[in-house]
Length: 166
Length: 440
Image (cartoon, rainbow over all chains, first blue to last red; front, top):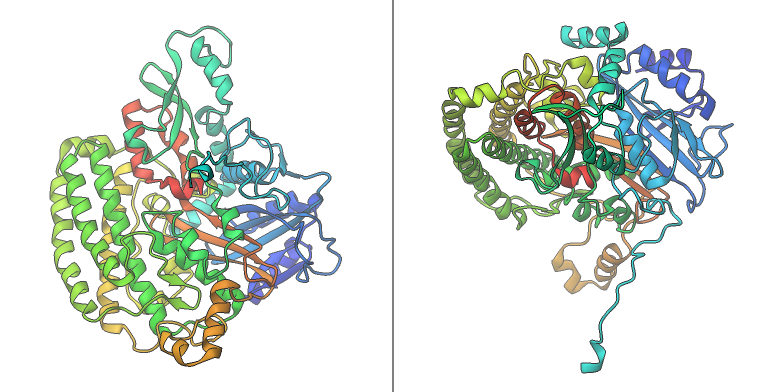
């Protein structure tokens, strides 16, 4: 395990932390693509998961390493190295006024649907994505429902005159 | 330990085979909106040269097509009867379950996630519970772990039996459908006895399981172990020696290991390519390191391999269940940590504090320390992951489920490319997507 951490440090000099025993990297937006690429060259052969967290109403994160400025959105990517049996998670801070990150499509084509889902539900754009469109919601849907400022149950239900007959 | 296949596949990636995947991508995946596709459907044109091509057309398949396993819809670009590019359109079952998960307590969470992959609900409950327990930092009693393992392996059996049934039905072996459902029902009967429900059990919860196994559960398991294996042999006689079945599966929808890795494919589809990877063995969770089983791999990654891998996985799961029968330890079925476990029913009648405690757990819920964690299990369809962010409150701040079918669906255009439309049905069936998990 210590072996793995050492190589990660060398290849990607980005702030690292651990969460519940899982190693997490915190690259900036500029270093994001380069970090993923060097991790891939190192043996992280598959991008298992990609998602976004909206920290709008979070009381304040204490698990970010020093020097990382918390932003509203966080793109979370999970990579796996089958040969060494290790996983690594990347958490990229994305500001609310410019929610864009580069797409991982060229490195891991499997992130295509995951990035579309992240765009659909959070409104985070992925630059260079080959099919940047909604995936789960209809194409003409307005809004991004998993954002914290989107309410739940937003469709008003009209109850027909039931009360008069009681 | 690295298997040669792993090295080979990873090596192939270094040589730029994902470049090849990308190249193929452009010709396999139909990337256009429905409006563009509709226009193309009216005046069929060659998308590259813009010339009117008589033979080329856009065909819509689903979402109500019987072989699309629910509500999968496909846009197929056809040249005569050959599929050129295609695009799976999903979302017809999207009910915002991740958003719902943010508004339910950690104790209510399993009721929500169990409805995602409705063919293997216990795995969703398990992965959610594992993630919560990691955040809480609590240990689950050994018996609870083994009960979880028993139930999950039986669930794998029932899920793969469902696959055998629907796969047979899609390929015209309709009698297979009846046999598959019949054996699955035997397993579901056991689930009903243990959890009270055939599906959507809400049985595995943070801290353990909802109830101990009923008296005489060993007899029920022995009954299952007795009846299912000979019937699996019958399936093999029925299907493997059936020339039509073989002809429709063999060589259809071939996937290579490097391609599968690049497309984030996991589970039986990845293993069918010959790639030796199973989370139960390679990242042991529960007590999988204490039981003996084989990881089943295929040879050429075609639809037949995917069928055969799943059939053999049923046998391996039953082999694990057989060992659990002997190894099942005694003890608690849920943690005695008072923070997450409500007091026993009898205590509520005699103690005011117990009543308050019970009320607090079920109304407010227990608080989970701030943090974020990713847990993963090997579900019948591949790696099922759960990413939970907690802000220290009783509800998850963010709950994300990494559904294996969601990623596996991306292979469809690649598997169908250049094949006949009749093969599309065989391919969808062999990928075995569960739309509840895809759309969440």
